[in-house]
Amino acid sequence: MLRTGKVSGFVRTVAVGALLGLGVAADAPTQTVSVGQLSFEAPGSWKSVKPRSQMIQTQLTIAPAQGDEDPAEFTVSAFAGGGGGIDANIKRWQSQFKDAGGNEPKLDRKTVKGKNVDVVRAETAGHYYPPPFTRLPDKADYRLLGAIVQTDDAGYYLKLIGPEKTISAARPAFDKMLATIKAGEK
Image 1: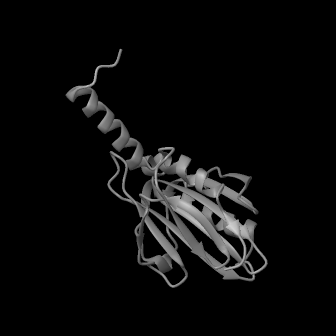
Image 2: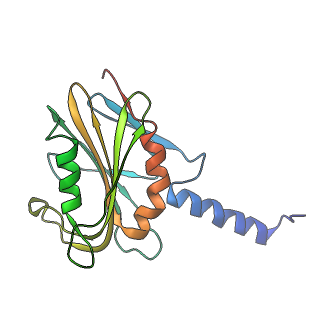
Protein backbone atom coordinates (compact mmCIF):
# COMPACT_ATOMS: atom_id res chain seq x y z
CA MET A 1 0.00 0.00 0.00
CA LEU A 2 1.34 3.42 -0.98
CA ARG A 3 1.47 5.83 1.90
CA THR A 4 0.87 9.48 1.24
CA GLY A 5 3.02 11.99 2.96
CA LYS A 6 6.04 14.19 2.47
CA VAL A 7 8.28 11.53 0.98
CA SER A 8 5.76 10.08 -1.50
CA GLY A 9 4.58 13.60 -2.44
CA PHE A 10 8.17 14.59 -3.08
CA VAL A 11 8.78 11.50 -5.22
CA ARG A 12 5.57 12.15 -7.16
CA THR A 13 6.55 15.80 -7.71
CA VAL A 14 10.03 14.84 -8.94
CA ALA A 15 8.64 12.18 -11.29
CA VAL A 16 6.02 14.50 -12.80
CA GLY A 17 8.59 17.29 -13.12
CA ALA A 18 11.02 14.97 -14.88
CA LEU A 19 8.40 13.85 -17.37
CA LEU A 20 7.27 17.39 -18.10
CA GLY A 21 10.85 18.59 -18.42
CA LEU A 22 11.48 16.03 -21.13
CA GLY A 23 8.24 16.83 -22.92
CA VAL A 24 7.12 13.20 -22.92
CA ALA A 25 4.25 13.19 -20.45
CA ALA A 26 1.12 11.78 -22.07
CA ASP A 27 -1.01 14.72 -20.98
CA ALA A 28 1.63 17.45 -21.31
CA PRO A 29 0.26 20.66 -22.82
CA THR A 30 0.90 21.34 -26.47
CA GLN A 31 1.03 24.40 -28.67
CA THR A 32 -0.25 24.70 -32.22
CA VAL A 33 2.43 25.73 -34.70
CA SER A 34 1.41 26.93 -38.17
CA VAL A 35 3.72 27.68 -41.07
CA GLY A 36 2.10 28.33 -44.44
CA GLN A 37 -0.37 25.53 -45.06
CA LEU A 38 1.22 23.24 -42.46
CA SER A 39 0.17 22.95 -38.82
CA PHE A 40 1.06 20.59 -35.97
CA GLU A 41 1.06 20.24 -32.18
CA ALA A 42 4.47 20.79 -30.56
CA PRO A 43 5.19 20.28 -26.86
CA GLY A 44 4.25 23.30 -24.78
CA SER A 45 7.63 23.12 -23.03
CA TRP A 46 9.38 24.00 -26.31
CA LYS A 47 9.72 27.79 -26.11
CA SER A 48 9.31 30.11 -29.08
CA VAL A 49 12.29 32.34 -29.87
CA LYS A 50 13.08 34.81 -32.63
CA PRO A 51 14.33 32.90 -35.71
CA ARG A 52 18.08 33.34 -36.17
CA SER A 53 17.71 33.52 -39.97
CA GLN A 54 15.24 34.81 -42.54
CA MET A 55 15.11 31.27 -43.95
CA ILE A 56 13.49 30.05 -40.72
CA GLN A 57 9.79 30.74 -40.27
CA THR A 58 9.49 29.27 -36.76
CA GLN A 59 12.11 28.50 -34.12
CA LEU A 60 11.65 26.86 -30.73
CA THR A 61 14.22 26.04 -28.07
CA ILE A 62 14.29 22.99 -25.82
CA ALA A 63 15.96 23.10 -22.42
CA PRO A 64 19.04 20.90 -22.11
CA ALA A 65 18.68 17.49 -20.50
CA GLN A 66 20.70 16.77 -17.37
CA GLY A 67 24.35 16.48 -18.37
CA ASP A 68 24.04 18.64 -21.51
CA GLU A 69 25.10 22.29 -21.51
CA ASP A 70 23.39 23.49 -24.70
CA PRO A 71 19.68 23.66 -25.45
CA ALA A 72 18.32 22.01 -28.58
CA GLU A 73 16.94 24.03 -31.47
CA PHE A 74 13.80 23.21 -33.45
CA THR A 75 13.30 25.08 -36.71
CA VAL A 76 10.74 25.06 -39.49
CA SER A 77 11.51 26.40 -42.95
CA ALA A 78 9.26 26.47 -45.99
CA PHE A 79 10.32 26.91 -49.60
CA ALA A 80 7.99 27.42 -52.53
CA GLY A 81 8.60 24.85 -55.22
CA GLY A 82 9.95 22.28 -52.76
CA GLY A 83 13.35 23.71 -51.82
CA GLY A 84 15.48 21.16 -53.65
CA GLY A 85 13.53 18.02 -52.83
CA ILE A 86 13.61 15.37 -50.17
CA ASP A 87 16.70 13.36 -51.17
CA ALA A 88 18.97 16.39 -51.65
CA ASN A 89 17.98 17.92 -48.32
CA ILE A 90 18.40 14.70 -46.37
CA LYS A 91 21.81 14.21 -47.96
CA ARG A 92 22.74 17.79 -47.00
CA TRP A 93 21.65 17.18 -43.39
CA GLN A 94 23.72 13.99 -43.25
CA SER A 95 26.79 15.78 -44.68
CA GLN A 96 26.71 18.24 -41.77
CA PHE A 97 27.71 15.40 -39.41
CA LYS A 98 30.86 13.25 -39.19
CA ASP A 99 31.39 10.03 -37.28
CA ALA A 100 34.51 9.27 -35.19
CA GLY A 101 36.39 8.28 -38.38
CA GLY A 102 35.55 11.55 -40.14
CA ASN A 103 32.98 9.94 -42.43
CA GLU A 104 29.31 10.71 -42.94
CA PRO A 105 27.43 8.83 -40.23
CA LYS A 106 24.61 6.39 -40.75
CA LEU A 107 21.27 8.04 -41.42
CA ASP A 108 17.95 6.42 -40.58
CA ARG A 109 15.13 7.39 -42.92
CA LYS A 110 11.51 6.33 -42.98
CA THR A 111 8.11 7.63 -44.01
CA VAL A 112 5.55 8.14 -41.26
CA LYS A 113 1.96 9.30 -41.36
CA GLY A 114 0.84 12.76 -40.32
CA LYS A 115 -2.85 13.65 -40.04
CA ASN A 116 -3.33 13.93 -43.81
CA VAL A 117 0.21 13.87 -45.27
CA ASP A 118 3.21 11.62 -45.54
CA VAL A 119 6.19 12.80 -43.51
CA VAL A 120 9.74 11.73 -44.35
CA ARG A 121 11.61 11.38 -41.06
CA ALA A 122 15.42 11.35 -40.84
CA GLU A 123 17.83 10.88 -37.96
CA THR A 124 21.60 11.06 -37.74
CA ALA A 125 24.25 11.86 -35.14
CA GLY A 126 27.92 12.62 -34.66
CA HIS A 127 30.11 15.71 -34.69
CA TYR A 128 27.92 18.52 -36.06
CA TYR A 129 29.34 21.00 -38.56
CA PRO A 130 26.67 23.67 -39.18
CA PRO A 131 26.54 25.37 -42.58
CA PRO A 132 29.06 28.26 -42.69
CA PHE A 133 26.40 30.94 -43.23
CA THR A 134 24.90 30.17 -39.78
CA ARG A 135 28.11 31.24 -38.02
CA LEU A 136 27.38 28.61 -35.38
CA PRO A 137 30.26 26.61 -33.86
CA ASP A 138 30.71 22.92 -34.57
CA LYS A 139 29.68 20.61 -31.75
CA ALA A 140 30.63 17.07 -30.73
CA ASP A 141 27.99 14.49 -29.76
CA TYR A 142 25.04 16.13 -31.49
CA ARG A 143 21.96 14.55 -33.04
CA LEU A 144 19.47 15.64 -35.69
CA LEU A 145 15.85 14.61 -35.97
CA GLY A 146 14.43 15.94 -39.21
CA ALA A 147 11.18 15.78 -41.12
CA ILE A 148 10.16 16.85 -44.60
CA VAL A 149 6.66 17.39 -45.91
CA GLN A 150 6.04 18.19 -49.57
CA THR A 151 2.75 19.90 -50.44
CA ASP A 152 1.43 21.60 -53.55
CA ASP A 153 2.51 25.01 -52.23
CA ALA A 154 5.92 24.29 -50.66
CA GLY A 155 8.45 21.95 -49.15
CA TYR A 156 8.45 22.12 -45.34
CA TYR A 157 11.62 21.26 -43.41
CA LEU A 158 11.44 20.57 -39.67
CA LYS A 159 14.75 20.09 -37.86
CA LEU A 160 15.53 19.36 -34.23
CA ILE A 161 19.27 19.65 -33.57
CA GLY A 162 21.11 19.55 -30.27
CA PRO A 163 23.17 17.61 -27.77
CA GLU A 164 22.75 13.83 -27.79
CA LYS A 165 21.02 13.46 -24.40
CA THR A 166 18.62 16.34 -25.02
CA ILE A 167 17.58 15.08 -28.45
CA SER A 168 17.28 11.48 -27.27
CA ALA A 169 15.00 12.65 -24.46
CA ALA A 170 12.92 14.72 -26.92
CA ARG A 171 12.60 11.92 -29.53
CA PRO A 172 9.23 10.56 -28.25
CA ALA A 173 7.73 14.07 -28.27
CA PHE A 174 9.16 14.73 -31.74
CA ASP A 175 7.62 11.53 -33.12
CA LYS A 176 4.30 12.28 -31.45
CA MET A 177 4.42 15.75 -33.02
CA LEU A 178 4.99 14.31 -36.51
CA ALA A 179 1.76 12.32 -36.21
CA THR A 180 -0.14 15.62 -35.76
CA ILE A 181 1.13 17.29 -38.94
CA LYS A 182 -1.70 18.47 -41.13
CA ALA A 183 -1.51 20.21 -44.52
CA GLY A 184 -4.38 22.33 -45.70
CA GLU A 185 -5.61 25.83 -46.27
CA LYS A 186 -4.34 28.68 -44.09
